[in-house]
Length: 368
Image (cartoon, rainbow, N blue to C red; front, side):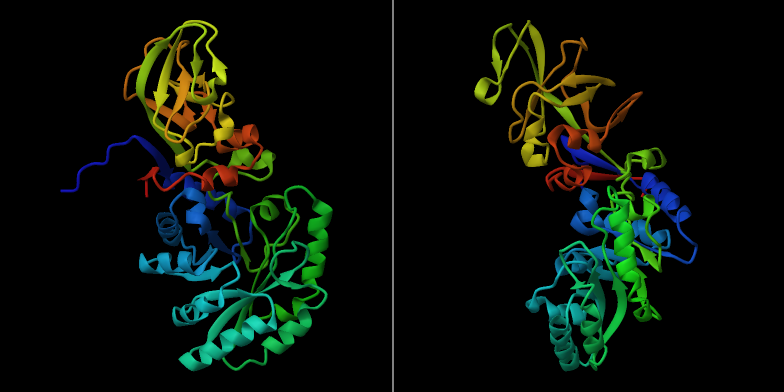
């Protein structure tokens, strides 16, 4: 029998919350519009295979990944559905994309021509989604000239343009820009017929500026975070991040803590050592800035976050035990620590906090 894992630093993934978020998202779109679950970057740190399997049980047929390796991981673990590779593929990856009937994103005729040649040699049909760059400035054929690329691609014998899509650059902050991108995209409506058409990410969906088309691509909203703060009340964070107290010691007034001595104790204090650090993805920028929850109470980080450990001042709590559970992200009673709070304190976004939780943090799945 496999021994039960010792929980030292772990993340709990609540699949019930994931299903609730999916339900809320579906209520925002027409019943005929499909959901493409964004499971790239290990499902934003939530475990791509487990998340995809739950979404599949809920009727999601489309999945978005960043690369061939991510797509193959889903297939190797038995995830059924259509997989769109959102990133630009390397030429060396084309044969496997065709062989495994994955859907590639292409931005120009040259990419399509190479895929067509490989598909022809394999006696298969390559399916692609053509991306139109309406203002993101990253991937896709520019909206002014994409028509010519599409015309050339449509003549290739072993390539099928199965979808047309774009990506919004500022749907969470610039309504006018989003409307302009939609306008540019709609200039290609003659290419939409009998193809999967999609544009909206989480911000586009929740911002109500965009159109649902045939499919939407929710990412961060699936995992319980709203790009628009006013919508946060409708979503449930899926991930909780926890660790344990590994040591407790009394520190006298005047002593310094951690590397560089950046924190000097102002009174006799009880300091707890926690089994988490920046190697686990806990941001070093939270040194002397962040807090954690112990016994439902916030306690501050003292000194620098180190590779494997952090220090917190538990003087205000009273009795703290070795091995006691500590919440880094999540809720305890009325207190809650969201990834968005950690992001705000470190000058980033919740996406980066969640994606940054490293592989050495064990994932425990609840209600899967």
